[in-house]
Image 1 (cartoon, rainbow, N blue to C red):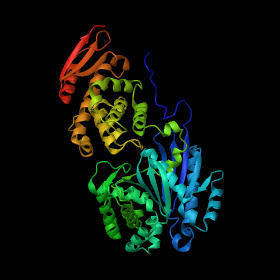
Image 2 (image 1 turned 180 degrees about the vertical axis):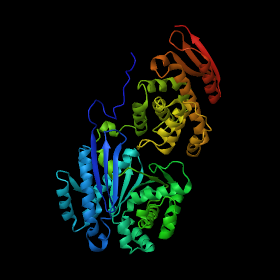
Image 3 (image 1 turned 90 degrees about the vertical axis):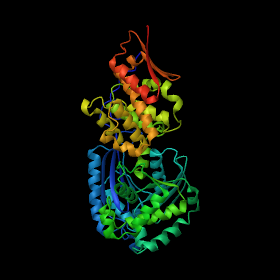
Image 4 (image 1 turned 135 degrees about the vertical axis):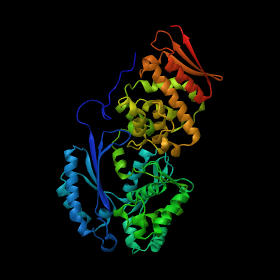
Length: 511
């Protein structure tokens, strides 16, 4: 019996209004509302608005929230309350961090805010709670992460020792970009000494030697965007962007030494963060020294996604993000949810002995490729290849790193017979090495052959099989099942054989 076709329901089963949740991140420099739709493995933010208010600016000297920012903050938060309620976000919660936590007038501000947002929980997080939320958010995007997490806000820096993706130890330090600047009197050299002294109080940071340093926070994401812009990197997505240790040190060094006028001229530099960037760079460089990290990995996930992850059922939260993201694309754009698993089994005899195992390994990527192989089915035929490629390469979500985006996008494009030299495929030639491109070409050719045979249906695919026999690639077709060795089938099995370095043979079997 064939698996029934399932239609896309936005990540939720059944009809009716979609489930939504909202989180207000009330930070020292900015306040942001994010509304998530559904409870999927990859958070789907359908509203994301930020206001840079500098609520914590001046806190170091006065001990109070910035009086000039309190009025605008209450106005913005009233808007966020109205937006979230209009979008039927439930639950809706406010998480306040270092500025509200440390300010003498923080309780008065919270009382005024509660009057503007009746019935909405307002939680003032401790530094350790901030760290726990950030670690949970990073875990959602990087399951099994090992190393050190640093979450830089305006008022504080949270550091976490990650073991197997979970928080083993955590500390909160008064090294947020705004606070560090104020403590140092705007002097970058003095800031270096202050940061080094504070980080020395956390001896377990040295356990990050040779491991990854995961960076969370708007100021650090700004540094990543600057590096992307300056190097011509082909994918303007900060999440999963990786720098080698020396690249990160050099970037931080340049920003630390730059005048405001020079920063203004740097590609990708955000105008609203110019004053804070040198101190974010100081914190990064000192943290690199304290940890001995081998790489820097930027995460778009942090406190907000950590809050969201707590809403997820454990089975959803612990699912593989690569396969979850691929399945979500297939359920939204594909035609038959029973086909991907059939394609995986159909390609096993040809590819299974030559793939690495483990999360993100060759078989996992092939599984994901089978899921996304039909997502251009509803697009115009002239643009299916390009649309499928761009949809995968640029999709929102935490499930795919840059390598997976490029590999899966290339496979899908080639499945739709894209020319490998097409200009819009240029990012793959930067993001993937030659052997990986060759694997993508072979898998794309195999999937193209499969769709030619089965028309996108598991029933017709069941009348065929593919296997290696020494130096031969053998395609077997069962008579009377609706498949036959027409000109297009012969051409495509020969193309697959050539990609694999095998002689292509077609055998027709009775019954």
